[in-house]
Amino acid sequence: MNTVLSRANSLFAFSLSVMAALTFGCFITTAFKERSVPVHIRVSKVLLKNVDDFTGPRERSDLGIINFDISADILHSPIFDWNVKQLFLYLSAEYTTKSNALNQVVLWDKIVLRGEKTTISLKDIKSKYFFFDDGNGLRANKNVTLTLSWNVVPNAGILPLITGSGHMSLPFPDTYETPKSY
Amino acid sequence: MLSIFKSIPTHMDYKGQKLAEQIFQGIILVSALVGFIYGLIIEQFGWTVYIVLGGFAISCLLTLPPWPMYRRHPLAWQPVVPESQGDVRDKPQENVKKPRKHK
Image (cartoon, each protein chain N blue to C red):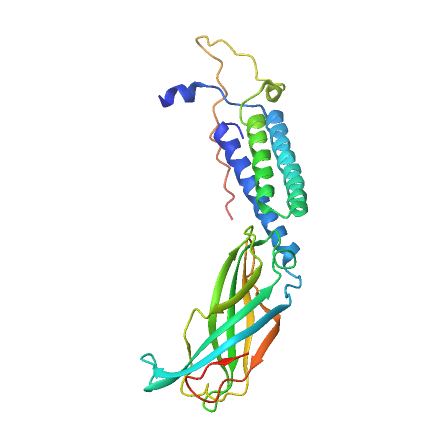
């Protein structure tokens, strides 16, 4: 500690260790909290088509086109706290067909940064991504469940994946090209 | 140009170094505690970082330059002995061979 450089080295290393301990403290204060909130999903229209699917092994697959509403109150705790940088929300559809026991398809997603004053209160949105089935399992499907989940991107620590409480199950139409309104 | 920087004296004596270390550790720990609690209350980790950086800047100012308070206990060197011819040198090491014991 006799020269300026030696003192500066000591000082800087100590500050960095203290900063690392504070970051760990920030993680610990938010690691074990309950983060799920109630979510309301409503579907307004479902249209089923049977089209050429060039990404799959067969000629034609079922394509679902859905219009929906989502509302969720995400502005305060428990979702946004001092350890959250942004949220990645996505709406996924889950169903069973004869050929596959479980299918999960992401229909829509959104990135919400902390500090943006957006409540999720969206009406009549179209799905962002194609709702293709692996085959023809969507027609007359009794139970397709839509849930909203989100990934929390923190400032420090692990990235939890939370599912909102509240989902919407609906049967799909029996015939192609006939829109069904709810 | 570097020689100018090298000629500025930056030393501190030992008690001064200990004082400087205690000062900067104390300042940074206090600012870390204050910053953590403040960030927890207003729910923004950015403020915690700003307060710790402020503590770092204050302790840089207080401990990096060699202030006089760090030079209050200088080492007591022996007084300079003027060199004269025919110095009294130390006794040269005697090459003593220990007698071997013959078995």
